[in-house]
Structures are given as structure tokens and as C-alpha cells.
Length: 165
Image (cartoon, rainbow, N blue to C red; front, side, top):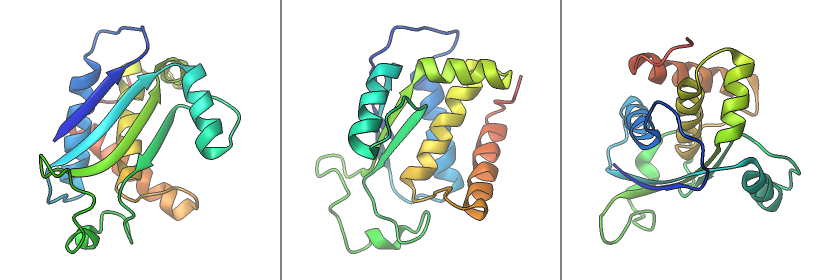
């Protein structure tokens, strides 16, 4: 797995953003049985930038915690069969599956961690897991989908022993 990582914000914490993201991403990919080496672009940003991006791409005029931009149009969540006859989602140089882009607002993650009473590391890891599931075709538009995503997110974080402090 490779991560094209960009930290455009200036807050620091007692954990390594890249290491936590890598651990969470690999755990989710293993959990979802991804048979390919994968690549994700991860951008850490501020509320202003994510607000502009949210408005531009989703026509929602507010900051949000995380945005996911999947590269693969999975017919069903984590249904890798769509890739068997289509190599357009693979990096021609590395051969890695290009899953997509994740943008996380660190100030929003801090705000939510405080509101939920857990660490910033836990909130950040949750947002990475949540977004990875979106990149793999999961959604939460109806309760049944939401419950499945919540269970998968929690399973990944428990496996990494990243709990609600």
C-alpha cells in the first residue's frame, strides 16, 4: 500500500498522522479482502479548504470532517470483480489499484473529538476508516448501509486497539 500524503495544516499531536492512516487503511483493506496492492491520496487540511472543496464538488456550503473521492465505481461494496477486465484503475508504473482521494479537516476532527469525548487520534482513525470504506464502495444513505459501515469501522479500530478513551 502506498499513500500520497500531504499535510496542509499546521496542528501537531502526539501521534504520527501518516503511520495511523497507513495502519487503518491496511486494516480496512485486509478486512475487506482487497486482493491488490493499493494507492490512496490523503490530504490533511483546514476548515476553509474543505469548505471550498465541499461546495465545489458536493454543492454543500459548509466545512465537513472528511471528503472521499473514489476512483473505482464498485457494483457492490468491495466487489473487486469489476477490476478483472478493466486495468484503467491501476497505476501503470506501480501496478497499484488507485482507490481515490481522502481529504480530512483536522480542525473539524479536533472539534468532533472534543464533542464525543475521545482523543483526536481516535477521531482521525475513525475518519480514515470511514473514508476508506467509501473508497471501496460503501455508503450510508439508508440505515441498513449506515449500520454496516459503523460495524466495519468499529471492527477496524478495535483490531488496532484504537478505542474511545
